[in-house]
Amino acid sequence: MQTFDLVRASDRPAAIAAGAESATAQQGASVRFLAGGTTLIDLMKLGVERPERVVDINRLGLDEIRKAENGDLFVGATARNSDLAHHPLVRADYAALSQAILAGASTQLRNAATTAGNLLQRTRCMYFRDLASACNKRKPGSGCPAIAGANRMLAILGTSNACIANNPSDMAVAMLAYDAVVHVQGVAGGRQIPLADFYVLPGQRPDIETMLAPGELITHVTLPPPKTGERSVYLKLRDRASYEFALVSTAVAVTLADGKIANARFALGGVGARPWRVRKAEDVLRGSAPDERAFRNAADTCLDGARPQSHNGFKIELAKRCIVHAFKQVTS
Ligand SMILES: Cc1cc2nc3c(=O)[nH]c(=O)nc-3n(C[C@H](O)[C@H](O)[C@H](O)COP(=O)(O)OP(=O)(O)OC[C@H]3O[C@@H](n4cnc5c(N)ncnc54)[C@H](O)[C@@H]3O)c2cc1C
Ligand code: SF4
Image 1 (cartoon, rainbow, N blue to C red):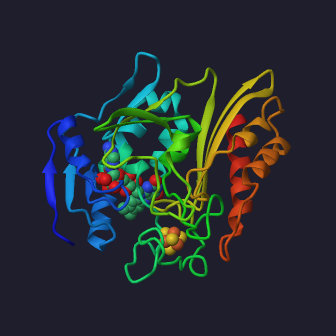
Image 2: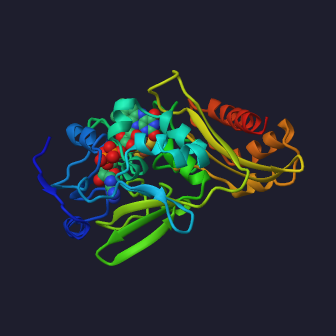
Image 3: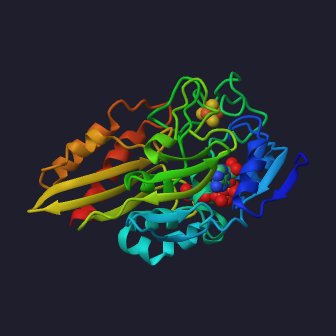
């Protein structure tokens, strides 16, 4: 591991000032914020991340979870994944979020991992983590061996000819379905970014993954108040029952009225270059009876345009079945 300076920021302005010395954006930056460290330290040990300065943000008091005055759920950037998953407000009003977090990693990891760190975790594409391989995400222009190689786990939606990596976060999928907003602060001030706009598609620059500007700190995430009568579920399909990333997952939330679907929102994980949500697929469901045909129509619309690689074509049908099954579960 390359040597680095460790800065233990004692307040938010100090952390932002230290982050602002970052030469470029979060990706490829010479400064990194340290939250739980469960992604960052791994990647530093592998030599994939090589920051010159690491700014510890664990003493900034950003770990609050509470109901905001406007009814939003307020989740601090360093709130631990376990605390969020088990919080009474989350269990009562955002069931799919609690389930998504608990479907990820292990208890020990969830006890250390944070909200912002989870949103910013990097892809598990094996070539990205192997310095002996080319990788456009690690080194733009070097190539993408996954396209002709081991791509079974990788994305079928939102990919480019430069990168087919998938976003591995479970939590982000549920947050996307719940219309979460990411609140960030930098030297130029604060701003809010809907999670739907937070991740950028790889195009020819897969090293750029989010809308974060250089040195910007995520301070918290908000989720709008729950919709009256809404039920939700997170379903994750994977190669083994625990401690495994998703082949396909979905967070589904539905409101029924008079035996019809009044409102539906859902997002997919494991299949997209970013957590995947298609509003048109939700519109298909509005006003329909909650039956298999309607769910299948929505699933077909959601997977429209999927581009399978040599080893992951099975994900198209698997994703559709995952969506149908989750909707059946939540409406039965
Ligand atoms: C073995 C293993 C299995 C896993 N399985 C799963 C799984 O099944 N599902 C799943 O979703 N995840 C899984 N994970 C990933 C895990 O959820 C992430 O490692 C974790 O959520 C990252 O959070 P952290 O706080 O440790 O982030 P860190 O490692 O501290 O940071 C990650 C990145 O975010 C940046 N960052 C952190 N906080 C901020 C902030 N406030 N503002 C700006 N930048 C910030 C850091 O600079 C860094 O670039 C697994 C991880 C491991 C090691
Ligand atoms: S899919 Fe993306 S992360 Fe994986 S090797 Fe290709 S460029 Fe790198």
